[in-house]
Image (cartoon, rainbow, N blue to C red; front, side, top):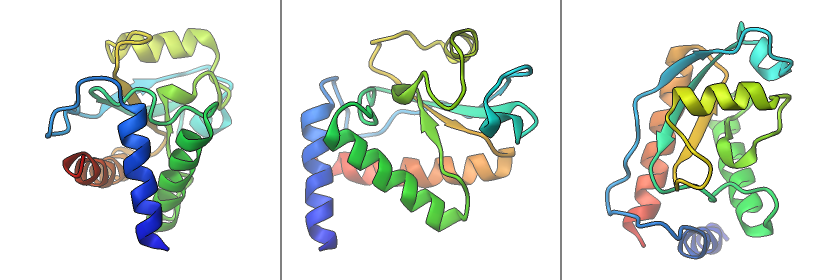
Length: 150
């Protein structure tokens, strides 16, 4: 059963990632962003702080409006939840959601030098730096393994 899931996820990668994917995953360092005043309960619970990382050419991988990418995103988020006993993560593909209004999304995008449709994905963590960094490294390793199989 696990092999079938893995095959499905490789298929999702191939179908979804239209941008030029190199064999090595390119990511940014984690960036701390203060979203003081946000209505997002998830972010408020972390003193209005988030940490973001930019993943080059992975935009579209977590779109909730498409069944395959929604399923992949749910699988990966659930894997993070179980592995790290946390609430998971969210991405720029999913916004606006999670109580983030347009001004806060704009602030995140500006801070991360992200533009709509630029091919880059932001992964957003509402935890302290250590937890965010641990989850981010896990996702980097997981996604790099998938990319190397394409």
